[in-house]
Length: 465
Ligand code: NAI
Image 1 (tube, rainbow, N blue to C red):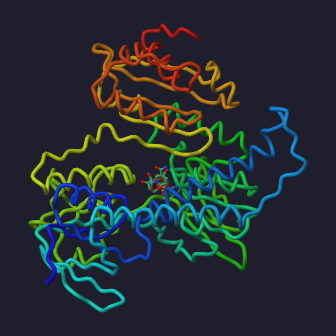
Image 2: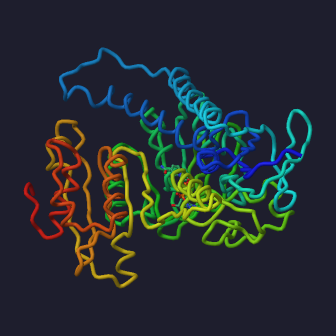
Image 3: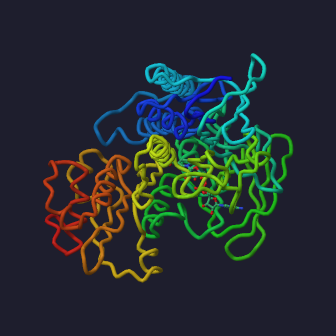
Protein backbone atom coordinates (compact mmCIF):
# COMPACT_ATOMS: atom_id res chain seq x y z
CA UNK A 1 0.00 0.00 0.00
CA UNK A 2 1.22 3.52 -0.81
CA UNK A 3 2.18 5.26 2.40
CA UNK A 4 2.68 8.91 3.20
CA UNK A 5 3.50 10.96 6.28
CA UNK A 6 0.29 12.90 5.82
CA UNK A 7 -2.81 12.48 3.67
CA UNK A 8 -4.94 15.59 3.24
CA UNK A 9 -8.53 15.25 2.03
CA UNK A 10 -9.66 18.42 0.24
CA UNK A 11 -7.56 20.79 -1.88
CA UNK A 12 -9.06 24.12 -0.82
CA UNK A 13 -6.97 26.90 0.74
CA UNK A 14 -6.71 24.90 3.97
CA UNK A 15 -5.71 21.59 2.40
CA UNK A 16 -3.35 22.65 -0.37
CA UNK A 17 -1.50 25.10 1.89
CA UNK A 18 -1.10 22.36 4.50
CA UNK A 19 0.32 20.04 1.82
CA UNK A 20 2.90 22.60 0.66
CA UNK A 21 4.04 23.40 4.21
CA UNK A 22 4.25 19.68 5.04
CA UNK A 23 6.54 19.03 2.07
CA UNK A 24 8.63 22.11 2.92
CA UNK A 25 9.21 20.51 6.31
CA UNK A 26 10.23 17.16 4.84
CA UNK A 27 6.95 15.29 5.26
CA UNK A 28 5.71 13.20 2.37
CA UNK A 29 2.23 14.58 1.58
CA UNK A 30 -0.68 13.28 -0.51
CA UNK A 31 -3.50 15.63 -1.42
CA UNK A 32 -6.81 13.96 -2.32
CA UNK A 33 -9.33 16.00 -4.33
CA UNK A 34 -12.56 14.91 -5.99
CA UNK A 35 -12.99 17.95 -8.27
CA UNK A 36 -11.06 18.36 -11.49
CA UNK A 37 -9.54 21.70 -10.46
CA UNK A 38 -7.63 22.30 -7.25
CA UNK A 39 -8.38 25.28 -5.00
CA UNK A 40 -11.74 24.33 -3.48
CA UNK A 41 -14.66 26.72 -3.06
CA UNK A 42 -12.45 29.81 -2.70
CA UNK A 43 -10.74 29.56 -6.06
CA UNK A 44 -13.45 27.88 -8.10
CA UNK A 45 -16.80 29.24 -6.89
CA UNK A 46 -16.05 31.69 -4.07
CA UNK A 47 -13.51 34.37 -3.25
CA UNK A 48 -11.78 34.54 -6.63
CA UNK A 49 -14.62 34.54 -9.18
CA UNK A 50 -16.59 36.92 -6.97
CA UNK A 51 -13.68 39.34 -6.82
CA UNK A 52 -13.32 39.18 -10.60
CA UNK A 53 -17.00 40.06 -11.06
CA UNK A 54 -16.90 42.73 -8.35
CA UNK A 55 -14.05 44.44 -10.19
CA UNK A 56 -15.70 44.18 -13.62
CA UNK A 57 -19.10 45.32 -12.38
CA UNK A 58 -17.55 48.25 -10.50
CA UNK A 59 -15.78 49.35 -13.70
CA UNK A 60 -19.07 49.10 -15.58
CA UNK A 61 -20.78 51.17 -12.91
CA UNK A 62 -17.97 53.74 -12.98
CA UNK A 63 -18.04 53.92 -16.76
CA UNK A 64 -21.76 54.65 -16.64
CA UNK A 65 -21.92 56.92 -13.64
CA UNK A 66 -18.48 57.89 -12.37
CA UNK A 67 -16.45 59.21 -15.29
CA UNK A 68 -17.99 62.55 -16.21
CA UNK A 69 -16.66 64.12 -13.00
CA UNK A 70 -13.17 63.28 -14.30
CA UNK A 71 -13.94 65.01 -17.58
CA UNK A 72 -14.38 61.74 -19.44
CA UNK A 73 -17.54 61.39 -21.49
CA UNK A 74 -17.78 57.87 -22.95
CA UNK A 75 -19.94 57.85 -26.06
CA UNK A 76 -21.76 54.73 -24.95
CA UNK A 77 -21.23 52.00 -22.42
CA UNK A 78 -22.49 48.53 -23.21
CA UNK A 79 -22.43 45.44 -21.09
CA UNK A 80 -20.89 42.31 -22.62
CA UNK A 81 -21.82 39.79 -19.93
CA UNK A 82 -20.39 36.72 -21.74
CA UNK A 83 -16.99 38.48 -21.93
CA UNK A 84 -17.21 39.48 -18.25
CA UNK A 85 -17.92 35.86 -17.36
CA UNK A 86 -15.15 34.62 -19.67
CA UNK A 87 -12.63 36.92 -17.96
CA UNK A 88 -13.75 35.56 -14.60
CA UNK A 89 -13.34 32.02 -15.92
CA UNK A 90 -9.84 32.61 -17.20
CA UNK A 91 -8.73 34.17 -13.89
CA UNK A 92 -10.06 31.11 -12.06
CA UNK A 93 -8.35 28.78 -14.54
CA UNK A 94 -5.00 30.53 -14.31
CA UNK A 95 -5.09 30.42 -10.52
CA UNK A 96 -6.25 26.82 -10.20
CA UNK A 97 -3.66 25.73 -12.78
CA UNK A 98 -1.16 27.69 -10.70
CA UNK A 99 -1.99 25.54 -7.68
CA UNK A 100 -1.34 22.39 -9.71
CA UNK A 101 2.08 23.83 -10.64
CA UNK A 102 2.75 24.63 -6.97
CA UNK A 103 1.95 21.03 -6.07
CA UNK A 104 4.49 19.76 -8.62
CA UNK A 105 7.10 22.26 -7.48
CA UNK A 106 6.67 21.18 -3.87
CA UNK A 107 6.51 17.46 -4.73
CA UNK A 108 3.04 17.01 -3.26
CA UNK A 109 1.36 13.86 -4.64
CA UNK A 110 -2.05 14.90 -5.93
CA UNK A 111 -4.55 12.03 -6.05
CA UNK A 112 -7.74 12.72 -8.02
CA UNK A 113 -10.79 11.03 -6.54
CA UNK A 114 -13.14 11.00 -3.59
CA UNK A 115 -11.35 10.35 -0.33
CA UNK A 116 -13.03 8.39 2.47
CA UNK A 117 -11.59 8.05 5.94
CA UNK A 118 -11.70 4.32 6.67
CA UNK A 119 -9.90 4.42 10.00
CA UNK A 120 -7.07 6.43 11.55
CA UNK A 121 -4.19 6.20 9.09
CA UNK A 122 -6.27 4.71 6.25
CA UNK A 123 -7.98 6.54 3.41
CA UNK A 124 -9.81 4.99 0.45
CA UNK A 125 -9.76 6.97 -2.79
CA UNK A 126 -12.29 6.22 -5.50
CA UNK A 127 -11.75 7.86 -8.84
CA UNK A 128 -11.71 7.21 -12.54
CA UNK A 129 -9.29 4.31 -12.06
CA UNK A 130 -11.36 2.54 -9.42
CA UNK A 131 -10.80 2.41 -5.69
CA UNK A 132 -7.54 2.05 -3.82
CA UNK A 133 -6.42 2.51 -0.27
CA UNK A 134 -3.53 4.65 0.92
CA UNK A 135 -2.02 4.94 4.37
CA UNK A 136 -0.29 7.56 6.49
CA UNK A 137 0.61 8.49 10.06
CA UNK A 138 -1.66 11.54 9.91
CA UNK A 139 -4.89 12.26 8.04
CA UNK A 140 -6.04 15.87 7.67
CA UNK A 141 -9.70 16.53 6.96
CA UNK A 142 -10.12 19.73 4.95
CA UNK A 143 -13.43 19.22 3.15
CA UNK A 144 -14.68 22.77 3.68
CA UNK A 145 -18.30 23.86 3.81
CA UNK A 146 -21.50 23.94 1.75
CA UNK A 147 -24.29 26.54 1.54
CA UNK A 148 -27.08 26.34 4.12
CA UNK A 149 -30.48 25.59 2.62
CA UNK A 150 -33.64 26.98 4.20
CA UNK A 151 -35.96 24.08 5.06
CA UNK A 152 -38.90 25.47 3.09
CA UNK A 153 -36.80 26.67 0.17
CA UNK A 154 -34.81 24.00 -1.64
CA UNK A 155 -32.20 25.16 -4.12
CA UNK A 156 -33.19 24.44 -7.72
CA UNK A 157 -30.07 25.94 -9.28
CA UNK A 158 -32.08 28.17 -11.63
CA UNK A 159 -34.53 30.37 -9.73
CA UNK A 160 -33.53 29.60 -6.14
CA UNK A 161 -29.77 29.62 -6.13
CA UNK A 162 -26.58 29.57 -4.10
CA UNK A 163 -23.62 31.86 -4.72
CA UNK A 164 -22.25 29.29 -7.19
CA UNK A 165 -25.08 29.93 -9.66
CA UNK A 166 -25.22 33.65 -8.83
CA UNK A 167 -21.62 33.85 -10.06
CA UNK A 168 -22.68 32.56 -13.44
CA UNK A 169 -26.11 34.00 -14.39
CA UNK A 170 -26.25 34.14 -18.18
CA UNK A 171 -28.20 37.38 -18.13
CA UNK A 172 -28.79 40.21 -15.71
CA UNK A 173 -31.94 39.43 -13.75
CA UNK A 174 -34.49 42.24 -13.75
CA UNK A 175 -35.02 41.64 -10.08
CA UNK A 176 -32.93 39.71 -7.60
CA UNK A 177 -33.89 39.04 -4.00
CA UNK A 178 -31.07 38.05 -1.69
CA UNK A 179 -31.78 36.39 1.64
CA UNK A 180 -29.01 37.28 4.08
CA UNK A 181 -26.96 40.48 4.33
CA UNK A 182 -23.68 38.71 5.15
CA UNK A 183 -20.56 38.71 2.99
CA UNK A 184 -22.08 36.72 0.12
CA UNK A 185 -25.37 38.61 0.08
CA UNK A 186 -23.68 42.01 0.03
CA UNK A 187 -21.02 41.09 -2.52
CA UNK A 188 -23.25 39.25 -4.99
CA UNK A 189 -26.03 41.80 -4.43
CA UNK A 190 -23.52 44.54 -5.33
CA UNK A 191 -22.41 42.77 -8.51
CA UNK A 192 -25.91 42.42 -9.94
CA UNK A 193 -27.08 45.80 -8.68
CA UNK A 194 -24.21 47.46 -10.55
CA UNK A 195 -25.05 45.48 -13.68
CA UNK A 196 -28.63 46.73 -13.60
CA UNK A 197 -30.74 44.33 -11.52
CA UNK A 198 -33.15 45.65 -8.93
CA UNK A 199 -31.69 44.09 -5.80
CA UNK A 200 -33.53 43.67 -2.50
CA UNK A 201 -31.74 42.10 0.46
CA UNK A 202 -33.86 40.55 3.21
CA UNK A 203 -32.02 40.11 6.50
CA UNK A 204 -33.14 38.54 9.75
CA UNK A 205 -31.09 40.82 11.99
CA UNK A 206 -31.46 44.59 12.34
CA UNK A 207 -28.32 45.39 10.36
CA UNK A 208 -26.18 44.44 7.40
CA UNK A 209 -22.89 42.60 7.96
CA UNK A 210 -24.01 41.76 11.49
CA UNK A 211 -20.55 40.54 12.52
CA UNK A 212 -19.09 44.02 12.04
CA UNK A 213 -18.91 46.97 14.41
CA UNK A 214 -22.43 48.51 14.48
CA UNK A 215 -21.26 51.91 13.29
CA UNK A 216 -19.54 50.29 10.32
CA UNK A 217 -22.66 48.31 9.42
CA UNK A 218 -24.63 51.55 9.35
CA UNK A 219 -22.06 53.29 7.15
CA UNK A 220 -21.98 50.39 4.71
CA UNK A 221 -25.76 50.11 4.58
CA UNK A 222 -26.03 53.82 3.80
CA UNK A 223 -23.47 53.57 1.00
CA UNK A 224 -25.10 50.52 -0.59
CA UNK A 225 -28.56 52.09 -0.34
CA UNK A 226 -27.25 55.15 -2.18
CA UNK A 227 -26.17 52.76 -4.95
CA UNK A 228 -29.74 51.53 -5.27
CA UNK A 229 -29.78 48.39 -3.16
CA UNK A 230 -32.89 47.97 -1.02
CA UNK A 231 -32.63 46.47 2.46
CA UNK A 232 -35.41 44.81 4.40
CA UNK A 233 -33.88 44.40 7.83
CA UNK A 234 -35.34 42.63 10.84
CA UNK A 235 -37.33 40.47 8.46
CA UNK A 236 -37.86 36.76 8.77
CA UNK A 237 -38.39 34.87 5.53
CA UNK A 238 -41.00 32.19 6.07
CA UNK A 239 -41.92 30.91 2.64
CA UNK A 240 -41.35 31.03 -1.07
CA UNK A 241 -42.86 29.61 -4.21
CA UNK A 242 -41.62 29.30 -7.75
CA UNK A 243 -44.10 29.77 -10.55
CA UNK A 244 -42.75 29.73 -14.06
CA UNK A 245 -40.02 32.32 -14.25
CA UNK A 246 -40.95 34.11 -11.03
CA UNK A 247 -40.21 33.47 -7.38
CA UNK A 248 -42.38 34.89 -4.63
CA UNK A 249 -40.73 35.27 -1.26
CA UNK A 250 -42.85 35.85 1.80
CA UNK A 251 -41.56 37.22 5.07
CA UNK A 252 -42.57 38.89 8.27
CA UNK A 253 -41.42 42.51 8.14
CA UNK A 254 -39.92 44.60 10.94
CA UNK A 255 -43.40 45.56 12.12
CA UNK A 256 -44.48 41.92 12.34
CA UNK A 257 -46.69 42.20 9.24
CA UNK A 258 -46.75 39.70 6.39
CA UNK A 259 -45.04 40.98 3.24
CA UNK A 260 -43.95 39.42 -0.02
CA UNK A 261 -41.64 40.16 -2.91
CA UNK A 262 -41.54 38.82 -6.42
CA UNK A 263 -38.29 38.36 -8.32
CA UNK A 264 -36.66 36.59 -11.27
CA UNK A 265 -33.96 35.02 -9.15
CA UNK A 266 -33.59 34.34 -5.47
CA UNK A 267 -30.14 34.03 -3.91
CA UNK A 268 -30.12 32.30 -0.55
CA UNK A 269 -27.02 33.44 1.36
CA UNK A 270 -27.84 32.59 4.96
CA UNK A 271 -24.48 31.07 5.80
CA UNK A 272 -22.55 27.90 5.11
CA UNK A 273 -22.31 24.69 7.11
CA UNK A 274 -19.32 22.42 7.60
CA UNK A 275 -19.07 19.69 5.00
CA UNK A 276 -18.84 17.09 7.73
CA UNK A 277 -21.20 14.70 5.97
CA UNK A 278 -18.44 14.04 3.43
CA UNK A 279 -15.35 11.82 3.38
CA UNK A 280 -16.90 9.19 5.65
CA UNK A 281 -16.19 11.24 8.76
CA UNK A 282 -19.31 10.24 10.62
CA UNK A 283 -18.99 6.56 9.68
CA UNK A 284 -15.38 6.56 10.87
CA UNK A 285 -16.54 7.94 14.23
CA UNK A 286 -15.23 11.51 14.03
CA UNK A 287 -16.95 13.46 16.80
CA UNK A 288 -18.94 16.55 15.81
CA UNK A 289 -19.99 19.49 17.94
CA UNK A 290 -22.37 22.41 17.55
CA UNK A 291 -23.66 23.10 14.01
CA UNK A 292 -21.98 20.00 12.60
CA UNK A 293 -18.45 21.26 13.14
CA UNK A 294 -15.71 18.71 13.69
CA UNK A 295 -14.52 18.85 17.28
CA UNK A 296 -10.77 19.40 17.52
CA UNK A 297 -8.32 20.10 20.32
CA UNK A 298 -5.73 22.90 20.39
CA UNK A 299 -3.55 20.90 17.98
CA UNK A 300 -6.38 20.35 15.45
CA UNK A 301 -6.69 16.67 16.44
CA UNK A 302 -10.16 15.12 16.37
CA UNK A 303 -11.31 12.49 18.86
CA UNK A 304 -9.56 9.90 16.63
CA UNK A 305 -5.79 9.60 17.07
CA UNK A 306 -3.84 10.88 14.07
CA UNK A 307 -6.95 12.36 12.45
CA UNK A 308 -6.95 16.16 12.23
CA UNK A 309 -9.30 18.79 10.81
CA UNK A 310 -8.86 22.39 9.65
CA UNK A 311 -10.69 25.24 7.92
CA UNK A 312 -14.47 25.59 7.54
CA UNK A 313 -14.94 22.13 9.09
CA UNK A 314 -13.92 23.38 12.54
CA UNK A 315 -14.51 26.31 14.91
CA UNK A 316 -13.93 29.93 13.93
CA UNK A 317 -14.88 32.06 10.95
CA UNK A 318 -15.29 30.37 7.57
CA UNK A 319 -12.55 32.26 5.80
CA UNK A 320 -9.94 31.10 3.28
CA UNK A 321 -7.06 32.86 5.04
CA UNK A 322 -8.01 31.37 8.40
CA UNK A 323 -8.01 27.90 6.81
CA UNK A 324 -4.60 28.56 5.26
CA UNK A 325 -3.12 29.65 8.58
CA UNK A 326 -4.48 26.48 10.17
CA UNK A 327 -2.99 24.40 7.35
CA UNK A 328 0.45 25.87 8.01
CA UNK A 329 0.15 25.53 11.78
CA UNK A 330 -0.95 21.91 11.54
CA UNK A 331 1.85 20.94 9.13
CA UNK A 332 4.31 22.51 11.58
CA UNK A 333 2.78 20.61 14.51
CA UNK A 334 3.01 17.36 12.53
CA UNK A 335 6.67 18.13 11.85
CA UNK A 336 7.27 18.56 15.58
CA UNK A 337 7.26 22.36 15.56
CA UNK A 338 5.10 24.76 17.59
CA UNK A 339 2.44 25.64 15.00
CA UNK A 340 -0.02 28.27 16.19
CA UNK A 341 -2.85 30.47 14.91
CA UNK A 342 -3.76 33.76 16.60
CA UNK A 343 -7.52 33.80 16.17
CA UNK A 344 -7.69 37.27 17.72
CA UNK A 345 -5.95 38.70 14.68
CA UNK A 346 -7.90 37.16 11.79
CA UNK A 347 -9.18 39.95 9.53
CA UNK A 348 -12.61 39.91 7.91
CA UNK A 349 -13.34 41.69 4.64
CA UNK A 350 -16.44 42.36 2.57
CA UNK A 351 -15.50 43.48 -0.95
CA UNK A 352 -18.33 45.89 -1.61
CA UNK A 353 -17.74 49.49 -2.63
CA UNK A 354 -16.74 50.92 -0.23
CA UNK A 355 -15.10 47.86 1.25
CA UNK A 356 -15.54 46.80 4.84
CA UNK A 357 -12.54 45.37 6.67
CA UNK A 358 -12.02 44.71 10.32
CA UNK A 359 -9.85 42.90 12.82
CA UNK A 360 -10.16 42.40 16.56
CA UNK A 361 -12.99 43.41 18.85
CA UNK A 362 -15.94 45.65 17.98
CA UNK A 363 -17.02 48.43 20.32
CA UNK A 364 -20.07 46.33 21.27
CA UNK A 365 -17.92 43.31 22.14
CA UNK A 366 -15.67 45.46 24.34
CA UNK A 367 -18.74 46.76 26.13
CA UNK A 368 -20.15 43.25 26.63
CA UNK A 369 -16.80 42.10 28.01
CA UNK A 370 -16.54 45.13 30.31
CA UNK A 371 -13.31 46.34 28.71
CA UNK A 372 -12.82 50.12 29.12
CA UNK A 373 -12.00 51.63 25.73
CA UNK A 374 -11.27 54.86 23.96
CA UNK A 375 -11.87 55.23 20.25
CA UNK A 376 -10.44 57.36 17.47
CA UNK A 377 -12.16 57.95 14.14
CA UNK A 378 -11.16 59.54 10.90
CA UNK A 379 -13.17 60.02 7.72
CA UNK A 380 -11.91 59.31 4.21
CA UNK A 381 -13.42 62.58 2.99
CA UNK A 382 -10.63 64.40 4.87
CA UNK A 383 -7.93 62.33 3.13
CA UNK A 384 -6.20 63.75 0.03
CA UNK A 385 -5.67 60.42 -1.70
CA UNK A 386 -9.31 59.35 -1.23
CA UNK A 387 -10.37 62.69 -2.70
CA UNK A 388 -8.14 62.23 -5.76
CA UNK A 389 -9.50 58.72 -6.23
CA UNK A 390 -13.03 60.09 -6.05
CA UNK A 391 -13.73 57.58 -3.32
CA UNK A 392 -14.37 59.54 -0.17
CA UNK A 393 -17.02 57.44 1.50
CA UNK A 394 -16.33 55.80 4.82
CA UNK A 395 -14.22 56.00 7.91
CA UNK A 396 -11.68 54.19 10.04
CA UNK A 397 -12.14 53.50 13.73
CA UNK A 398 -9.40 52.48 16.12
CA UNK A 399 -10.45 50.97 19.44
CA UNK A 400 -7.81 51.00 22.15
CA UNK A 401 -7.79 49.98 25.80
CA UNK A 402 -8.64 53.06 27.88
CA UNK A 403 -5.77 52.53 30.31
CA UNK A 404 -3.01 50.78 28.36
CA UNK A 405 -3.69 52.23 24.88
CA UNK A 406 -3.25 48.72 23.42
CA UNK A 407 -5.15 48.35 20.15
CA UNK A 408 -8.12 45.98 20.53
CA UNK A 409 -9.84 46.42 17.21
CA UNK A 410 -9.63 48.32 13.94
CA UNK A 411 -12.60 48.80 11.63
CA UNK A 412 -12.58 50.32 8.19
CA UNK A 413 -15.30 51.15 5.71
CA UNK A 414 -13.65 52.78 2.74
CA UNK A 415 -11.72 52.40 -0.48
CA UNK A 416 -9.21 49.54 -0.50
CA UNK A 417 -10.00 48.71 3.12
CA UNK A 418 -9.07 45.11 2.24
CA UNK A 419 -5.44 46.15 1.72
CA UNK A 420 -5.35 48.71 4.51
CA UNK A 421 -6.39 46.14 7.11
CA UNK A 422 -3.00 44.40 6.83
CA UNK A 423 -1.33 47.17 8.85
CA UNK A 424 -4.03 46.86 11.50
CA UNK A 425 -3.50 43.08 11.69
CA UNK A 426 0.26 43.60 12.13
CA UNK A 427 -0.30 46.04 14.99
CA UNK A 428 -2.69 43.65 16.73
CA UNK A 429 -0.30 40.75 16.18
CA UNK A 430 2.57 42.65 17.78
CA UNK A 431 0.41 43.94 20.64
CA UNK A 432 0.87 47.54 19.50
CA UNK A 433 -0.79 50.67 20.83
CA UNK A 434 -2.71 53.48 19.14
CA UNK A 435 0.29 55.67 19.94
CA UNK A 436 2.50 53.24 17.95
CA UNK A 437 0.34 53.66 14.82
CA UNK A 438 0.21 57.41 15.33
CA UNK A 439 4.01 57.60 15.40
CA UNK A 440 4.61 55.43 12.31
CA UNK A 441 5.51 57.52 9.26
CA UNK A 442 2.86 56.88 6.59
CA UNK A 443 3.53 57.91 3.00
CA UNK A 444 1.65 60.97 1.78
CA UNK A 445 -0.74 61.05 0.05
CA UNK A 446 -2.04 57.56 0.78
CA UNK A 447 -5.24 56.04 2.09
CA UNK A 448 -3.22 54.54 4.94
CA UNK A 449 -2.96 58.00 6.49
CA UNK A 450 -6.60 57.58 7.52
CA UNK A 451 -5.51 54.82 9.89
CA UNK A 452 -2.74 56.96 11.33
CA UNK A 453 -5.10 59.89 11.87
CA UNK A 454 -7.75 57.63 13.45
CA UNK A 455 -5.08 56.28 15.81
CA UNK A 456 -3.99 59.81 16.71
CA UNK A 457 -7.63 60.65 17.32
CA UNK A 458 -7.77 58.04 20.09
CA UNK A 459 -6.20 60.89 22.07
CA UNK A 460 -8.03 63.55 20.05
CA UNK A 461 -4.93 64.77 18.26
CA UNK A 462 -5.39 64.02 14.56
CA UNK A 463 -3.55 66.58 12.47
CA UNK A 464 -6.06 66.93 9.64
CA UNK A 465 -9.39 66.66 11.36
P1 NAI B 1 -22.96 34.93 6.69
O1 NAI B 1 -23.02 34.08 7.87
O2 NAI B 1 -21.83 35.88 6.49
O3 NAI B 1 -24.31 35.79 6.58
C1 NAI B 1 -25.58 35.19 6.55
C2 NAI B 1 -26.62 36.24 6.88
O4 NAI B 1 -27.88 35.66 6.70
C3 NAI B 1 -26.54 36.72 8.32
O5 NAI B 1 -26.54 38.12 8.32
C4 NAI B 1 -27.81 36.14 8.94
O6 NAI B 1 -28.34 36.95 9.96
C5 NAI B 1 -28.74 36.08 7.75
N1 NAI B 1 -29.81 35.09 7.87
C6 NAI B 1 -29.73 33.83 8.37
N2 NAI B 1 -30.94 33.23 8.27
C7 NAI B 1 -31.77 34.10 7.69
C8 NAI B 1 -33.16 34.06 7.31
N3 NAI B 1 -33.90 32.97 7.51
N4 NAI B 1 -33.71 35.16 6.74
C9 NAI B 1 -32.95 36.27 6.53
N5 NAI B 1 -31.66 36.36 6.87
C10 NAI B 1 -31.07 35.29 7.42
O7 NAI B 1 -23.08 33.91 5.46
P2 NAI B 1 -22.85 34.06 3.92
O8 NAI B 1 -22.91 35.48 3.48
O9 NAI B 1 -23.79 33.09 3.30
O10 NAI B 1 -21.37 33.56 3.75
C11 NAI B 1 -21.01 32.22 4.13
C12 NAI B 1 -19.61 32.16 4.63
O11 NAI B 1 -18.69 32.47 3.61
C13 NAI B 1 -19.38 33.14 5.76
O12 NAI B 1 -18.68 32.51 6.79
C14 NAI B 1 -18.53 34.22 5.15
O13 NAI B 1 -17.64 34.79 6.06
C15 NAI B 1 -17.80 33.49 4.03
N6 NAI B 1 -17.55 34.40 2.96
C16 NAI B 1 -16.56 35.30 3.08
C17 NAI B 1 -16.33 36.25 2.12
C18 NAI B 1 -15.27 37.24 2.32
O14 NAI B 1 -14.40 37.02 3.15
N7 NAI B 1 -15.29 38.34 1.62
C19 NAI B 1 -17.13 36.30 0.89
C20 NAI B 1 -18.17 35.33 0.88
C21 NAI B 1 -18.34 34.42 1.87
